[in-house]
Image 1 (cartoon, rainbow, N blue to C red):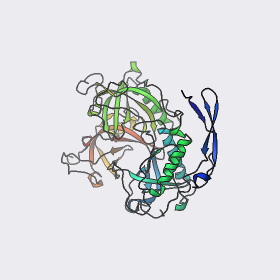
Image 2: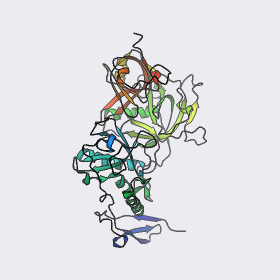
Image 3: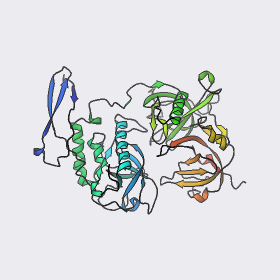
Image 4: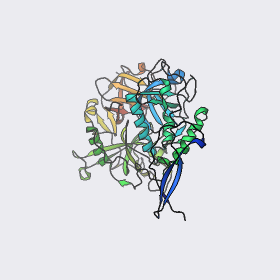
Amino acid sequence: MKNKKILTLSIACLAAIGMTGCDDISTTSVSETTENGTSETTSLAEWVDYSSPIVLDHDYKNHDFYTDGIGQMTLKTCIDGDTAHFYPSVRTTSSDIVKSRFYGIDTPESTGQVEEWGKAASNFTKEKLNTAAQYGTIVVSSPFSEYSTPETDSTGTRYLSLIWVNYDTPDADYTDLVLLNLDIVQEGYSYVKGVSDIPDYANTFYAAEAQAKAYKLNLFSDEKDPLFNYGDYVDTSLLDIKKEIEKEIDDPNYKNAYDNVKVRIQGTVAGYSNNVLYLQSYFSTDNGGRNGGEYAGINIFCGMTTIPTKFKTINTYIEVCGLALDSATFGFQISDVTFKRSSTNPDDATVLITAEDNTDEFKLHTFEKTAKELEDSKYDCLNCSISVTDKVVVDSFYINDSDEITIGLAGYDFGVYIPFLFYGNSAMPNDVWNDEADFIGKSFQLSGIYTYHIQTSGNIVYQVTLRGSDDFVNSTVAE
């Protein structure tokens, strides 16, 4: 049987040597040690920086991304290794957020599903984009070498994009930008996927991937991912997690003890909205509850796939196993949960009590508070079901290109998040509210899930996330 080799790379990544023929490329010796202690030497072609020779071939300045397929951007948030959201600098036709799916690459998952090297890839992309955002230039273009209307991916909400960056020069010349998509492949954080629309770059992408494999970089390594949790699930409670979330909100420098921990939790379904499932549980003083007993909740990001209805039904008591992680936008959450209609795997989500049978100890509790009490509550009902007992008046409105509506309320700091086109109080499918005139100045009866999100500035904003149109009922006419 062959001895397993332990590869030690002691190679400095040299400056670009250009796209020379194979006969002209020098080699580098790499020491490999087998399990029995013998040393072997392997020769690798000298490192090539494939990203440097690739330059943008048309100017971005003063161009509108939504009409020309290219434009300068400011960074809103980096989602994972191959997805980020930007604000267009030129807003001639639209000021909507540009949700970019990086073209030609496919990094391991790090959000709804979590895979080996996914977090490492996400961290790499975030570091690059944050540096370019702070000191240099970010340009997003369609995968075409001409000005044209951008195309979305299969979701219809994200634009297939090439991400061009300069790390130290604001408003850099377009010839001084490098292609981040290619750099992600070159560093071994992604496979190449579907580069037919960039034929001039396709061979370079595959060459960069082959080099990353030869050098055994990151996801092509024989080593385990140091950021991936290979351990078993830890049984814990929503209350223990809530206490950590409180510390993290109060002190941005605090490290949540459950970050990157596989957890097994139980809770009652409080709602499902925008691919997020909300669970909550009650804890008496005997079970660690403070102030005579308290509720704790969490949000579970389910990814872009549809989960079975039995797990989304409000008042269902379930058990889930997932990975607890800090999200740069949505705070502390759980992801990488497997939802199946039927399963014998004890680590898959399980219905413990159906909604119909959940009538006693674990029955869903909805907090009833005035708007002022809700604003002052902070942690009492975070990620839990709430109903505001007095009416609220809308004084601001914003809708993005994904039909997600953000509402501001007169006299209160918390807002309302509506992750769907609003259908008012009618079952008629043509009764769609999507204009500020449908909301501004009107009063509403409000219910939903009390949540928070983190702005780009780092500020925490509280909001009520709607589960459906019944959570936001226009009461103006009745007054």
